[in-house]
Image 1 (cartoon, rainbow, N blue to C red):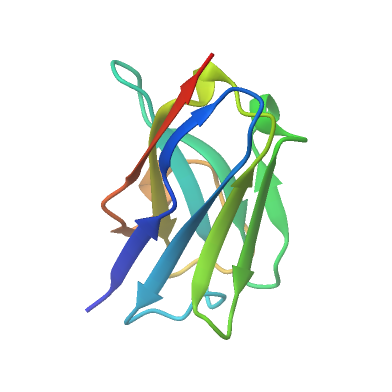
Image 2: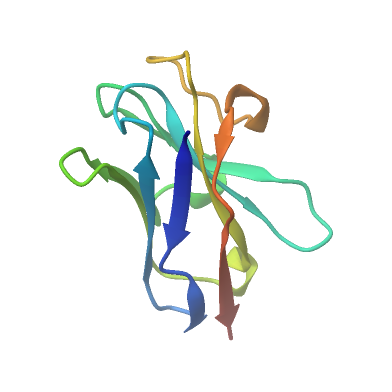
Length: 125
């Protein structure tokens, strides 16, 4: 049974930094595509970052330069570092994992079959 558990969310002032973690069980981080998505109230879920099986990252244009996706295979954990936080970064952040694709990781929620419960990130100005 695959479980993805996010942590590290919270309330932060604009300009600060945050690191989200996604601990996986029943699934090996690094085997397939993984990603981070976010959903703000009243908006659709948005893909922000992906990482493929050889560690190549991909980012949505709106966050490039402020977000870094990484993983620790030994800890079986995926991370998302967000710097220079803005109020528009406020959202529920979800970790997602694919079960088939290794190389081409899309910023589309439909590619991913396993999801965490989400971590709330709230940025105040």
